[in-house]
Length: 497
Ligand SMILES: *Cc1c(COP(=O)(O)O)cnc(C)c1O
Image (tube, rainbow, N blue to C red; front, side, top):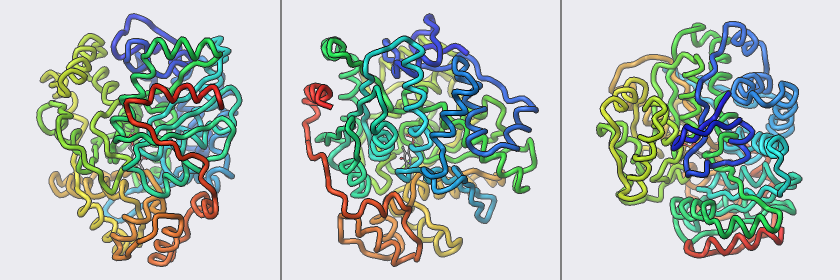
């Protein structure tokens, strides 16, 4: 399997090279040039396998320079039952009306990022070896909350790596912040940025392209790498859970083998829903991919407005902070595919985005999009209302991000009368966003600390996940705050880790 940059398909690289590099030197994202197909015998193997086995099979289709033994070993470690509260790594909970909630948050930091970030350290360290890299990999992460916690947890004390996480001062939940600033490990550091997620992400992109910094670090035996979802090693492990969910649904008779499902995904950086798109290209029967946004509805407008992406708009801080994003990086990969792998077209669009904050795709690309994608958004009131209704009517407790997807799906269904069974990605434990969830249920939360868990427990009778309960009594290790203009200077801290 060969990989190319979305902005230059002339240079082909291996999956190990793509994972070791993170972002391509031209600023593009690495993509496979073909999609492997799942055969009849693959589906039989998948149906008979547990989650680890399914993940190893799907990854093996893309990571062809890794042996089956390696991938089996990595998935055994990444999805070990003691890290996931049991063997049901990505359970599907069926609700009324053909809605099936795919719970992706049973990992160590209680959000779906764990699905990929428990795998990435294994993929990355192996990729570095395969590509002859001997320097220490310094993972820099910009986070809207969940990536940071999950990346810190995944990389903590992994030999040959260091990790530095940048999070926006305003816009992460108290629980997310607590998880980050209390993270243990000799090779980890955390830095708050005075700005929003896009500021942190843009500043990070500058570090990655700053030749001076790169050379300085290299002289000290370090190289930069990314754990953001621009890294192919982040995206690849996410494809498996949609395929796994389909296997579970056919096994329980909720879907006839071979018949289509919709997939509705609460979307921020467009990584999770892109994984669903790739699963479809591999042969997963998907009717519609429904892209759900909060009030930061730049993607809804893109899908609905005739293919104009326009980030020139107010940025809102919402109850679903992991989706408070105006530049969805992984959309670039979708543009690459729907343009027929036209690297020049992608280069031009991305140039327009960086110069003017907006671009418009061609009518052909638009038509390709409209066939497969639908989209919608909802505000914080609708989100809260959805949490309350699900809890009252279905006895199902969901977080704010999941509620956005459920609400957008309900709108879609009412608008289209499409009754295709639908997988709705649930991306975080409700206990990670206690305040918003408790308030949606009519409670009040005054505290900004771990006792928030007790409030939600009191309202619902449900127990918080063990990793969140374990935050009680932990002391913060990191309190640094930097201006976004000063991010570059923080790379000197890496030498101290
Ligand atoms: C990251 C995240 C999202 C958005 O996922 P993308 O892959 O960035 O689209 C949604 N919900 C939660 C809880 C997240 O952590």
